[in-house]
Length: 145
Image 1: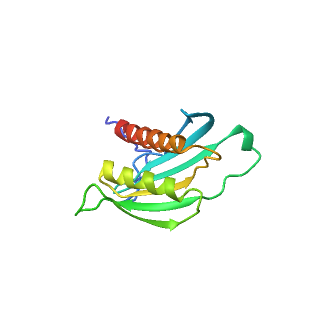
Image 2 (image 1 turned 60 degrees about the vertical axis):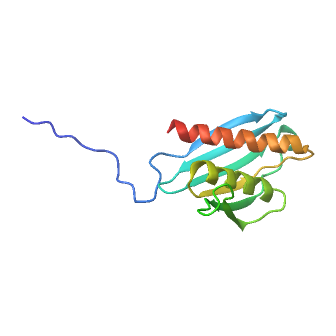
Image 3 (image 1 turned 45 degrees about the vertical axis):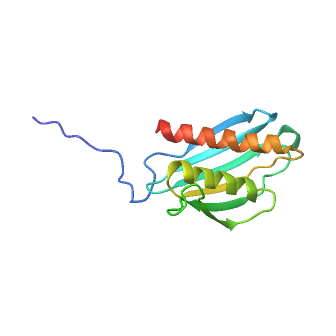
């Protein structure tokens, strides 16, 4: 008698991720009371990332939608990815654009980045460190897949 094997996985449509989104949280090194939250979805041809921060001093406030940026590798100048803001909020557009461009350059794939990161009263060094931590964490999570 032969064994019947049942596949409980439903087929995924083309262009969807092979796994559920990864969700990560980590404290920012130069702002230990601020937590960076990252959600990463690796799609078949692109990367979808959402970033936000939480701070105990602002826990009563809801996070705004933030900016949404699309970046893609530049075939003619590899070191300068192309990007456009799909939705721009002044407080988060620069952070979102930097992260999207770096991810597009490092992965060689288009990147969509949603960002409601808030660095209230932060120094330039803290924001630069935030970009570095976000990108390093995302790249590491992608490589683990």
